[in-house]
Amino acid sequence: MRTEPQPAPYRPAPEILGLADWLGDPVEPARFPKHIVRFRNDRWADAVGLGGMDDAGWAKHFAGFEPLDDNLQKPLALKYHGHQFRTYNPELGDGRGFLYAQLRDAAGRLLDLGTKGSGRTPYSRTADGRLTLKGAVREILATEMLEALGVDTSKTFSVVETGEELHRGDEPSPTRSAVMVRLSHGHIRIGTFQRLAALQEAEHMEALIAYCLEQFPGSQPPDDAPGRGDPAIVLMHQVVERCADLAAAWMVAGFVHGVLNTDNINISGESFDYGPWRFAPQWDPGFTAAYFDHQSLYAFGRQPEAMHWNCGQLAVALRLLTEAPPLIAALDRFVPLFEAAMQRRWCWRLGVRSAGAEADMHLLEQSVAEMRAEQISPDAFFFRHRGGRDAEGALAEALVDHQTLPGASDGSFWQGEPPSLHIEEVEALWAPIAERDDWQPLFQKINAIRALGAVLRS
Ligand code: AMP
Ligand code: MG
Image (cartoon, rainbow, N blue to C red):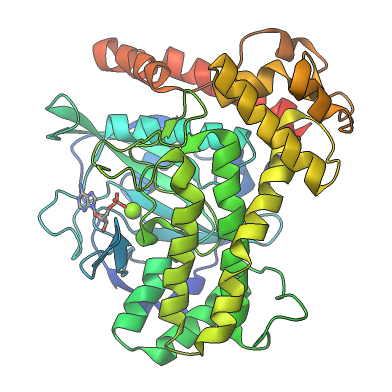
């Protein structure tokens, strides 16, 4: 689905500076007692020309936040609002992160280096602006696994342990601290637009739309879409397309993001901000990741609905500039786009060719029936039947028209155990770090996940 990141030279591109006066606040990074480099994403560092540093240089930039050459001279805490569990909150914004730098990859796409755990900002409210080391390790694991499974996700670029003691209700405390850097296609959220709508900043919203259309290029609306010449409508269609695909990508990955608030939804359609995420141990639509999600609003099977609702909030915000009917026409595309993306991605993960919408939908239904009957996880299901093999009964019948992709299940990879990342495994990877600073199991796991990604992409 995606190719390997390609090595490229460092190309600074601080495009945000044109919007910075009203989009963010310059902030000071925290000064940490220690810088212990724990994780460098060398594949992606090479793709943005930053792979050549030694660890000291790395820490100077990705924990000390000394500016990169010809880049932002001061980090920018971005301003946004958002709906949290359907309640509007105008007091959000980067409370423990900031935009540190912007650059371009080999294909010329604009990428942000943003932080998590880099200190307090005007948006920290009563919180400490910090990230736990365990939170950082969990974010490495989520991003690596999702990338391997073909999900459009932010990349964990760097994790540096920072030597502070943090107190958290959901971790044995005191607990270790870290600062993380993520690489992603922008940090413009649905909540960024909601803030401009709430403040009635029409000119700024026009400028932000122009920025998104230029920096995150997408397709044009369908020929019959009303208002298709209006930039706000073009953006609306692109976000609906991306969110529908992302919702399908999570479902096929068996992934529960956990906190699908509008401030966590990137306009570029990239999945990001991994807190209480989990991979579903079974195909259970009610499976809920966040212990604080008491209504199961963001349960596994409700993610498509949550994303549709979030797109609706973008439409409400864009009403500042445009009329409702063309926005509604864009929103109405969500469900058919989601279904098509489910079919396409299901076939891809299973290693078979599409056999048309009806046959693909039937395959999907029989696959779910099989997972339920066997009480197995999506990981186990897709592994067991990769290339359409070992299917019996109704599942075999549903597969008759689906050709196997060439080489789909060749090689020793498909003989072993399915790589997965269920909560017990995550805890088992964290334990040796917590108990004896043993990082080997984590790095072995990352290698196994990357091997899965390589065979799925090949
Ligand atoms: P999240 O649910 O992680 O996306 O965070 C929601 C809001 O709370 C955002 O504005 C975050 O910046 C802020 N936030 C979360 N944790 C902290 C923290 N430890 N310190 C400061 N702000 C935080
Ligand atoms: Mg967030």
